[in-house]
Length: 134
Length: 285
Image (spheres, each protein chain N blue to C red):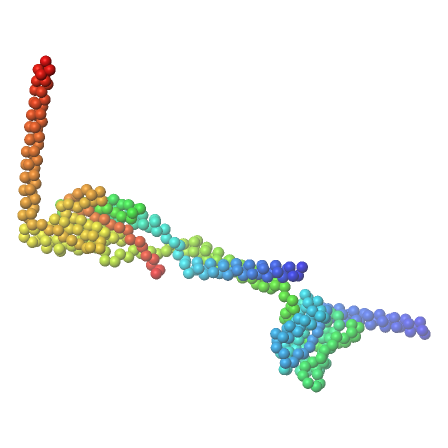
């Protein structure tokens, strides 16, 4: 009976020791990573929508695609092109998550569907954010 | 006379028994813990502690019940004083014994059964000890206290089990606590930032555009940017613009003439079809 109880005590002791080590290990890991994971898909779609809103408010046509992470900008006129240039630059600057990949301003600029437009056609692409902690 | 002697003897015995009982009662109340049933005390010179432990384990197996035996070791002169207790609360006497041996050579240690007599060797170092008979009436030496902590000869693993259980509880509690802090109290998402180096803005090309427009006879046909290749300006002269316009006019005129020709041909075709069938009729007849 004593032998059995000793084996049980030792086995139980080893199990609890392992459990304790696992608990402390998990606590240390969580303590070193106190922030919850950010939902990057939500951040992406929010950033694209907000950028498209800014562009539309400034008089541009904005076709946003969250899946591709792109925005196609169209402005079918060259009247007051200086103002258009200033406004589109301001909008791109305001969209801190988006980078300019293509730009065309002139008599003939082609959009995504290869349709010629006299005015401005531009494309923005979503850039993945970086962690501030690194 | 004989009867009176017998009676007085009986009275004397009764008195002695009563005294013994009282002294036993006094003994029992003096200690707040259990006295061991059997105590062995000794001295071992010129030995390593680990070897002494093995010796004591073997001795306990031979003379006592190992499952309920405790041992203690204390450095003394050129060796170690040791003690073995069978039963009891696991409290030892070596520290008080060593102190007492400096004052006197003959010490009586009290147990629950046979007392133990410890004698300091007159020649050489160390001590000798032996158990007294149960019915020997001796006075235990004052100053011998059961206060040292002893180790069990046979470990059951219970201590390890208790320690590990406490350790596990603390580990689990700390993990739960940190999780509650992270998801409940702190509740902060990972801070992110957008970093776009060298972001291109069309407005930076204004100077170039104005330069082109200021050139005589030229205009900006197209301003193009592609990531990787950079900005490109396509400028044309006014003549090219006019030529393009002229070309367009000529093209339109040609198209007009082509259309009218097509119409004429259609009319001629219709006229030919109308004359055709009457001639055939004449030939059949």
